[in-house]
Amino acid sequence: MILKIYSNKTNIVFFEKQITNEILTTYGIDVDSDNFTEIFETELLSDLLEENNIQSSLTYYELK
Image (cartoon, rainbow, N blue to C red; front, top):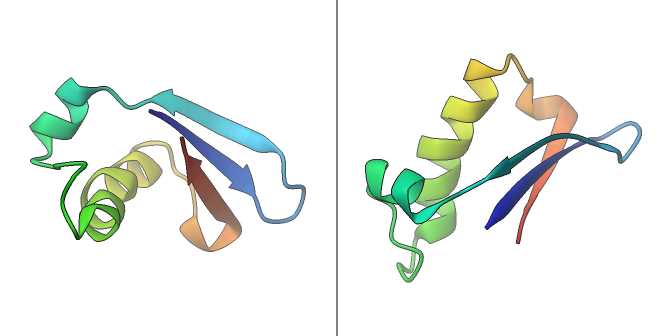
């Protein structure tokens, strides 16, 4: 999967990261779980935003 984070103002991708099975396993995230999105956002995405000093209120993301 590829995570892309966009700016709300410009709709341009300014952060992109390959999300591997290893990363998901590290966070205990199962892609087949009913609450995948919730766990992904509260665990992995929030860590990435914090590590990269990205304000979530100014962005949106896409996961493909």
